[in-house]
Image 1 (cartoon, rainbow, N blue to C red):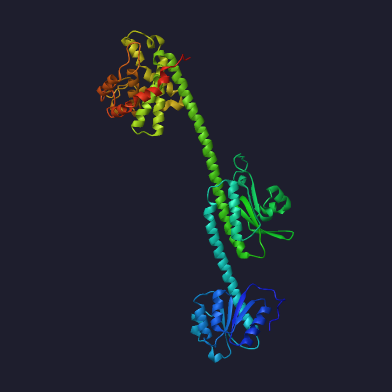
Image 2: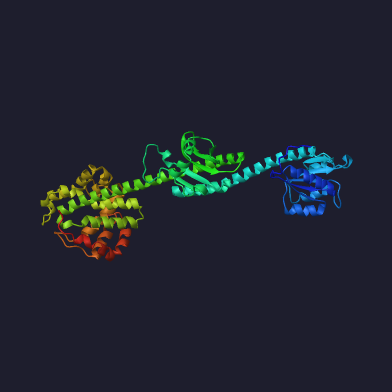
Amino acid sequence: MRKNRVGRKKNGFSMFILDDDRNMTDALQSYFEASGYDVEQSNDPLEALEQMREKAYDILLLDFIMYPICGDEVVARLREFDTNIYVIMLTGHREVAPPLNTIRELEIQGYFEKSDRFDQLELLVESCIKSIRQMKTVSRYQEGLSNILEAVPKMHRYLPMPVFAKELLAELLRISGAENGFVWLKPENMLPGEDIEEMKKEIFCGEGRWKDDTLDTFLEKYPSTKICFQRRQISTLVEGERHFVLIPLNIGEKLRLGMMGIIENGENTEGHDLYAVFGEQAASALHNLILHHLLQLNNQRLQLTYEHLEKGYMDTIEALRLLVDAKDIYTRGHSDRVAYYAVRLAQALGKSREYVEYVRAAGLLHDIGKIGVSDAILKKEAKLDDKEFSVIKKHPEMGANILARISMFQSIGDVVAAHHERYDGTGYPKGLKGEEIPEEARIVAIADAFDAMMSDRHYRKKLTMEECIRELEEGMGTQFDSNMIPAFLSVLKDFDAMDQELRWTYQRGNII
């Protein structure tokens, strides 16, 4: 007999022995319990089936010839609810052994002729144990991979970095079954040499024995952990009686984004393989999270930059508009109202936000060229003569020339240059016709003409709303784009409310 036994230490495998001979079951139970197996027995095939239905066993040793049913029938019924148990058939007579086809069909793993020596049977059992170990390893690996697949979507959510670290640690402990673990992240390694205030350089969180630790206290306890951080493979670090499994979070050959660790009891080779897979997935999720975080920071900075530029843009427009208003007291507020009406018309035409803002700027700057016209002409009380009017007619091109010198307003110059063109081609300065006139200029032209008609000037009083509407309708296809006038007339239905919004433009004080 094999005598390599040390006490009655359990080996972690269970066995069921079924034989109608009580002496045989007692002998086998005593033998295999001494070898470390957890053994139960029965002498009744039907009772044994009920026991095996209620509890799973790794190995079944059973006699072939029994009453009221034989061993092959027991196995056939057993396979209906347990396909994993390893079966070794026993018989006292070779001539009554089960047929080979029966052994194959019932997936019986071994056959043994009874004798008073069990060492050959033990070898057969040990062979089964090796297969069982392999199957359990495969099963654990598959379960581990399934757990990792379940964890992957959770890790790829966009979370604040400290929250991600805690979620990652929770998944590590769930997958490993460990009670003690830590996660140590180093986002700064993504950006060597750069200091980003919004991103923590290092993040540490622990559970179990490390729950209340900080990174400094952890490294003080386990200084060699910092050295292990440089390793690229899973490693085991021994600190006193503690064995740490350390899992690197690496991207490619050089980028180390952190490390995870657990305390695990015993040797677990397939676990290390699973931790390597989990570590790769966690590193990928962390890499994406850092990139997402950096992208968000860049977007926020770009947004702030854009807001500063936009403010500077509007401040410059305001300054230029104030220059025009200061030049001609009779038209103070005019540019604001033209911009307002132009915006309302552009919106009524279904234009985009960017287009509307462009039209607003063009409306505010449409008369910028009047800066180049002398006060004697702008403030003349009497009717202008032909020579003076020819000077006034130059202000659209003067405005375009002024804006051409300012890079941010160059594109508006074409609109400013054309806001006195007429749809029938009789306008100035170039006599553009129809769609030769920029669409934005056609919008500003309507807004400009309407405000001029609704304002008192030194050479005439303002028109009534009815007179304005009549002028707009009569100008369709000649002075104005006939496709835009109906939209503008619909805007004017709300004129009383609009007029209240524009009250401030009529109440300006002195402008320097």
